[in-house]
Image (cartoon, rainbow over all chains, first blue to last red; front, side, top):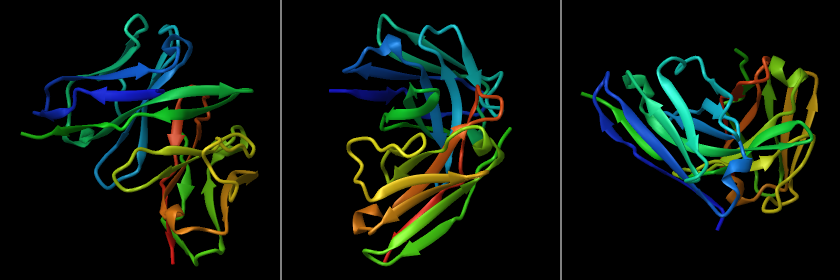
Length: 121
Length: 108
């Protein structure tokens, strides 16, 4: 079954760190770039970061650059998001999503169900 | 960074046609992708590229574009199409991505 399953969310105090994981199954994980996308409660979707299939290129949204680190372990079919210096405005459901490119058109073709991160004292 | 603007909400009578718009400078360079999100669920892909649908999306959904605007059209809207719809594209610099502000579609 082709799927992505996020884990690692929870309640964390401002300024602390948290690591999210996204386990992939049913497809060859190492062939795909992967994204993190988040959604604050009652708000829209916000792109967070992308890592290319080989892990050599990573790009971040302006609101998380310098605080969050995306990484992957292709031997474990797992994507990660290390979140440091967390702020209240980082409170959101975090989704991992698979990157698909067809004829130079790139999009997210597979999404996980998300994991909730709440930053609160 | 780029921005994609959508109308906050639109409504459509059951069986009628509704068009959702997405406007932004990045759409002059990149196709929009459309996602549907129902309450409490993850987004799902609806339209990608010029006008391509995944196999699980019914053919009443279609996409088009003109200049800096992309359109998602639902022809013969059904009750199950009631959801939030988000457009997305690559950013002007090509390595980042941006989502639209989202449109809530209500089927009356």
